[in-house]
Image (cartoon, rainbow, N blue to C red; front, side, top):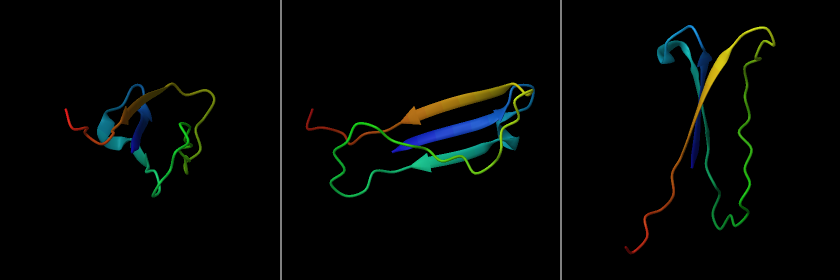
Length: 59
């Protein structure tokens, strides 16, 4: 699962947008696409935070 948090650089995380991408069953490709529904403005600075999670192994 991939989590993408987008918010304007001068504002807090609370006014940002969060997007998720989750792999479907038996997904083996190493690439992914997170679709952003809200338009980003070219003259505005944004902060992007990306988190990813994977299944825990036996270790």
